[in-house]
Length: 286
Length: 241
Image 1 (cartoon, chains in turn yellow, orange):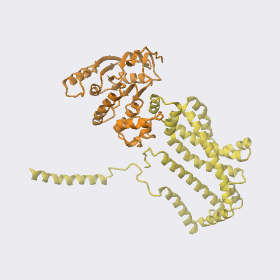
Image 2 (image 1 turned 180 degrees about the vertical axis):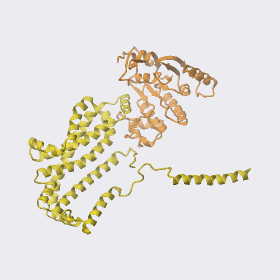
Image 3 (image 1 turned 60 degrees about the vertical axis):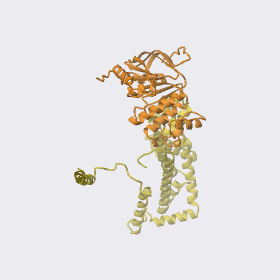
Image 4 (image 1 turned 90 degrees about the vertical axis):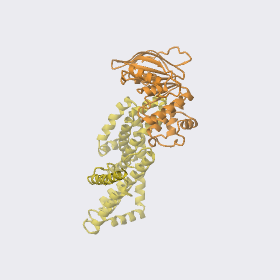
C-alpha cells in the first residue's frame, strides 16, 4: 500500500511543477502594479536630459548661438552669483511667487470648502472659476494692468488668480467625492459642523488638495515668467528678457535652469509633504 | 417629517406609535408600534426590502429624504453600528473611537481594551482585519455609553468564525454596559443566540414578536433552539422541510 502510494506520488509532483513552469512561461501571472520603486527614479529623466545636452554641445552638434553649452551656462552662473545679480533677482521673484502662492492657496481652499459644503456656494463660485480656468493668464494681464497698475500688486494678483484654479478644482472635487457614509456616520456621532469639517471633510479632501498644490507650486513660478517678462525692472523674468536684448544666450539658459530647479524642488517638497500627510493610505505608489 | 414625542415611561428606551415611512409614494413602514425596555436586546429579522433598514434609520433619525408620520421617542444618546465598520481611514484607531468627544482618551483606551484591541490604539484602520475594524466600531459606539445601540447587520460582512467570536463579545459588552439594543439582521441563528426578543418585519409591519426563552449559553444543538429557528424561518417564508 505504502509503496504504491509513494510511487504514485512522485510523478504527480513532477507533473505539477512542469505545469507551473509552463504557466510562468506563458506569462499567466502578470504584475499589474508598477512594482518596487527605483532608487533615485525621479531624477533619471532630468539627469538624462542634461547628459544629452552636454554630449550635444561637446560633440559640436548644438550651435552655441542656439543653445549654450552646459559649462558656458555654469560660467554665466558664476558671474551672476559673483556680482550678486542672481541672488537679487531670485529673491524678488521668490517673494512674488511665494506671496502669490500663499494667498492663492488660502483663497482657493476656502472657496472649495464653501462650494463643496453648500449648494448655493457651488452655484455662485463654480462658474466664475471655470471661466477663469478657460482664460489664459496672458490675456488677463492687460486688464489687470489697467486695474492695478504695473507695480507689485498686479504681479501678485496675477499669480494668485493662477494658483486659485488648480487648488479649487482638485479640493472641490475631493470634497464632493467624500463618501456619503462618512457624512451619515458624523450625524450619528452628533458631530458639530466645526468638528465635521476638521475631522472628516478636510482630511478627506487632503489628497485632492495636495494634488492641486502640486499643480499650484509649479504654476506660481510659471505665472512669474509671464508677469516679469511683460513689464518689470527686477526678477528672474526681467533678467532673462534683458539677456535676450543683449543676445546673452547663456544667461537666458541660466535663468531657465533656475526656473526648472525651482519647479522641481517645489514639486519634490509637496510630494514629501504628501507622503507624510497621507501615510494612512496604501496605494500603487508604495 | 413630523415626530411627536410620546409620554415615555421610565423603563422604556424606545417607543414608536403608528410609525409610517414612505419613499417615492411607496409605503415602507406601515404604522409600526414598538416598545423596547431599557437594557433589552431586540433582534429584527426580515427579508430584503421588508423595511428593516428603513426602521433602523428612522430610529437613528438618519432618514432625511423620506416622508412619514407617527410618534417616535428615542433617547438622545444613541449609537449606530453599521454593516461596514465605517472608520475614518485618516484617523488612528483611538482617534476613531473618540471622534467628536473631548477628554475621552482614557475611556477610549479602556474601551479598546474591552474589545480586545489594547496596543492597537495608534494603528491605522487599514492595518486591521475586517473583524478588528468592526470591533473598533463597537468600541466607538459603546464609549459614548448609549442608552440605545442600533446595529444594522453589523456582522454581515464577516467570515463565519469571526462572526461567532463577535457574538460572544457583543453579548459580554451588552451585559456589562446594558444599552437597549436593536439588532437588524437576516441571520436567524444570530437573532436567537443574542436577543431577548425577536421581531419579524414583513412589508413594513411586524408579523412576529417572539420572546426567546432559552437559558444562557444558547447552544445550537438545544432542541428548543431548533424549534425557534424553524418557527422564525417559517415566518420569513423559508420552509425547512
